[in-house]
Amino acid sequence: MIRKAFLMTLRPGNQDEYERRHNPIWPELQQVLREHGVHNYTIFLDRKVDRLFAYAEVDSEELWRHIAETEVCRRWWAHMKDLMLTNADNSPQAVDLDEVFHLT
Image (cartoon, rainbow, N blue to C red; front, side, top):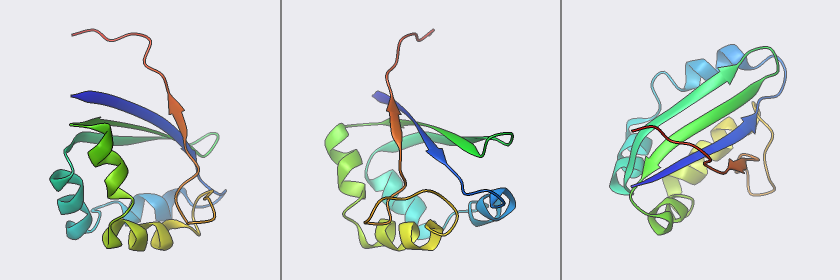
């Protein structure tokens, strides 16, 4: 199991809508995440700066990367692009974080 953490940024004024669209996320997106070995996926919001901190446990980096190739993920990105900073392909601009400590 691999622990992943990354940061993303909301556009100002979109906190409530971001939360609304995630409660719940689409069932077909949940299924894709599970089928690609994603567990314990959590997103936290720093409301003061519109910053998102995401944490997920994944079975493999390869499976994680393949999520981006699914039709459901591409639709989700298009659905969310107006709320957050994104790349040209609509994927969220994300900064990967390196793990430096873990307590079991």
